[in-house]
Image (tube, rainbow, N blue to C red):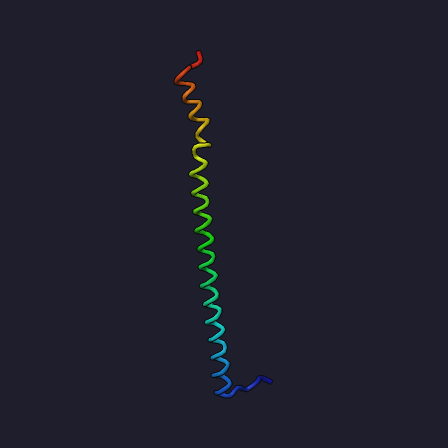
Length: 74
């Protein structure tokens, strides 16, 4: 048999559930902010790595161009 709730019990349950829902919303916002910060740090790290890696990556190309211009092999 289903339990019958009084108006006072229903108000009490509603307040409790609304408080839990508010707490979960707050935790969701805090967690989302943390994820956004982590993603921003990862993107900043990636940009820094790419900037430092470009000279290393292009060095062989520069060497090939310089040797072709300075002493072309015939």
